[in-house]
Image (cartoon, rainbow, N blue to C red; front, side):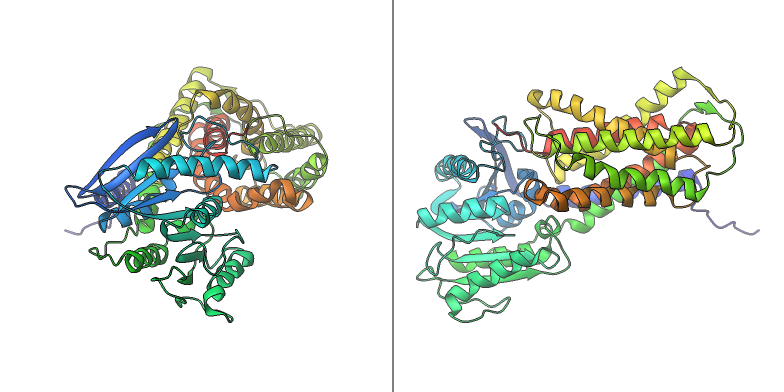
Length: 512
């Protein structure tokens, strides 16, 4: 009797492997908070989360500020690492971000007004944090990107802050003596200007060109300075880097002469395993979708025709929008992206219409509308909830309050226009090999052209381009599987449009 080898193409085998991966990843991610008491509160309208060891003596409190378009969930690795080592860690949402209903005054244009509002928010959270039972009165700060500038400025004005960590610091306010005991961390794949600022800070104490991973100055008099470079990570990845966590913990331990058990929240591999499992599970689940449309056999689209339709909107859209007014929503970058998606989708749609008019008759198809609605609902539910809920728990805030719902509606118009035409272009069997990848690269190239043409307004968009690429890959797989099963582009297009519009509405800062 011979045994047949197990085929990885069997849906049940893929589903079982995906479920196992999800279970292991959740076990490790949830287990990172073992032994901690985690409580949520509000300081006025500011959402605050406190992390500290259960039944532990009071300890130094570390207030943690996130960066632009971030939220306190993004800073969990630092909060858990510090709390598991005996600190009282406090994270919060800045105005216009996460679950904070207040808008961010000044937007990107009025730097002084914005900074004043962010400083006031940090001040309120610090005052609250120092009254907590887990605090022994000693204070440290940690901030990422925009948040790093805020914590450095606050620490300069408040010498009672014993130590500060600036992750991806771009402020040039630090001097040789203020703030006290400053560590700067940057990702090796981040822009050179952030690395240059880290070396500048270290050189203040070295009084000579500084080196990475060398501590200069003295913790006793507050002049300690250090620049640490986290290898292989960029502006978001630096938050999940093990090196970032180790450097931060060691810095505060030296500043406070504190010793923990050395726990480090190295969650990046487990997050990767979790979302890989969730994505993989989408394939066997897609086989449960109904056949929506029956289509006659059609000849493949000529690659020259496809490339013309794919490349034209990538070039034309940023040129059309270069000087066009796009500031019509109270959300940073969201209004521009809404228009970019819309114009890009419309140009693609015109190209598809012309190709159909000028090309051979491809025959009629029959669509079951009831099954179309069911398929679209199923794909959208899985794409939005199965990925969105874990992302909200472990990565970033995806909870959109009531004030953001109208923004979602406007953004959805743009994303639906783009993804519908993109699915018609790339998702069918008639599309040439590699169509989806080519279309994604064209769209990302279009965004890069727009950034270059209007760098002052859109420079923050460059930071999230890697995130957009990741979303394209994940949700591109979902829409591809849905198209193959249902024979119709709309289920995948609607799911992608909902997810992208929701992510932008929930994550981009509200401005006032």
